[in-house]
Length: 337
Image (cartoon, rainbow, N blue to C red; front, top):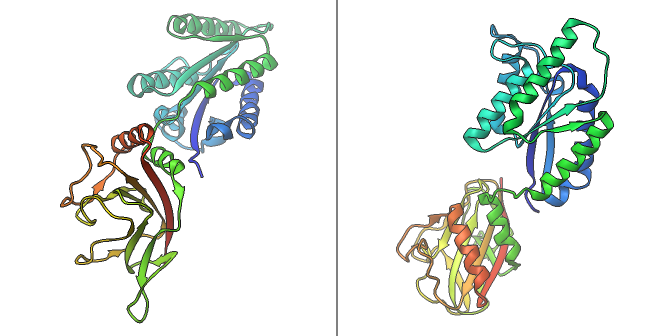
């Protein structure tokens, strides 16, 4: 099953855009049901009224929110909305919304996220008090301040905001490229492989005979057996329940040089057995190549197994893309209590 990435969205606004805030939730719920699954993502909106709990801070309520939910580096997207109110001042900014925006800017400049969107409502309304007029002036001043650095969007009314926001989210997801994590690179490798029952662990029975086993009890010594369908050079990779990926062959655990078709057992007969330490799913990928691979990071036959990093898997995938005389096999088993 492909990995699903969680993309968190921070929603910031004063209190006079409640309908727009509700539309953000509704649009994201709709996207999660329709577009997001095909992109292997799930969107989650974080907002103060739903995701923050009561607290105290001598620097004010916004400081409580900052500590609980406003670590902006956690978010993929910041969505700000204003209409006629800029909001309530904080000790650090003209309002909580402005402070959250400034925190998002700081995170973006440091880490490259979150992406920052800002919408301004243009629906006509009657402002009757000096306080309301002052709030509107502050909104316009804030808009003019950020406009040279941002591509902002106006909207006519809440339904128009909903439609624009839905379109923008859809475009953003279509343009977004998921980061190539170690897990995602491994999944690309698994997707290229053919599942086989010719790779499996062997554990000893009561008579001391070694037999194939679909499950390995934790703490049990075992061998891992690969039945090579053809002769060739073997790369054997293991992904353990902790998510670490190891190159077991070539290494000091595996036979050196080119292997003939038939059974290969790891570790070598004169070495100790493996021991299953962690409960969970173990995955194995075997690559059988007709020509010796020249990847610079591959261990030598007397080296310890190599813990794989993203650059190793990236180079291996590039090699597989350009080579036709390679077989890629996949198997998995479980370590149980």
